Length: 439
Image (cartoon, rainbow, N blue to C red; front, top):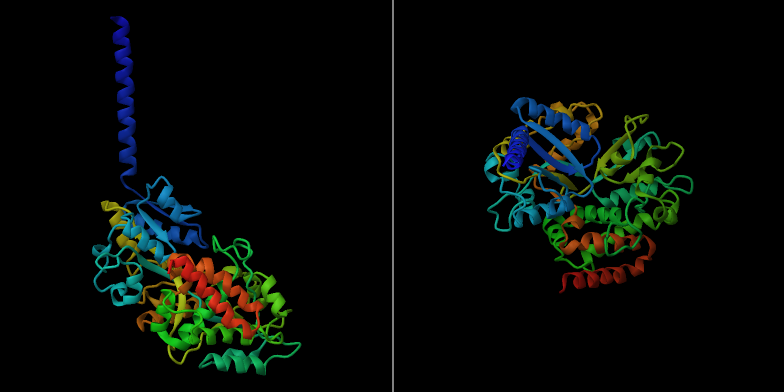
């Protein structure tokens, strides 16, 4: 009897301890919101924004960086409340399978997202009834960077179309002066021509092609291309591919020539632009230029960019962005999310001298920016979004991953082949995409 009472007493003590500990965990975490997302440059500035929201709301906010956000949502411990996604296709996928919840009630009706049908469609259900994500920052891949220290004429130059760029290139090229710093190898990704994963060399050529398609053929055609509804063998695509070769095929136009383009990483073209010992002074690299160089020891009075020219879409931008998604309907999650999608989000980040934050919200206060280069990028993005001339990188939107699996790797071949072989390459891409889509 005594032993039984002792056993019962031990059990009661253990049970009370377990109950108390469980209550402690519940109460200690009830005021915490976990945001999961990728590792990224200037993450510490983002955390400063979160700390500001935390101080304002009294809600503890924790940011957890993971290597693969999609994988985490599918197979991780799945205890996050808010997520940062970098691909609108993933937003739709996680919205359709109910991983993300509808945020339409949390977004102000006068929000820019409601005003831009294109961006809204990318993060909404197919019927348009639910919104699964909110774009909060953007990356511009329609910039041609230049170093005016190497060519004083370029500083005040404006081009109306790509033909004028070609003319200028020809006028300012020689055996000793090669205007373009270009390279396409992606050493940070998978092996070349790795069709199964697709994360391989050629993505920068895809960017070039997207710029030309939107610039020369407009939004409607570009959207068809993004949705695999236009064959690469169509004349418009062939002409844009030919335009790329008008630069890459001329060794006087490109530093190091064609062989250099293929063998060197994309980041090298950015480094060559700022290196005064290299004679090239133009680089067609988009926002990634700033990823590959730091502000330290760079004279940004000499480094600037030109908007990609277009007579059809003068404010065009091809790029991509980061997106907030909500994973549950908890009260604190909703409070934090409303602060993340407010017009004020990003003020701390944008005010930093070395900030690379370009808000996707056209109503964001332009005067907050202290970095004039980033301020210029924001103004360009603002015009593009307001005028509905912004478009997502087509390779990120293509069905069944055909952009990464096929387009990236295949377009790398564009640098290798002759102009006469472009149609053959285009038809090869068409066949492979049809097989992938099962059509």
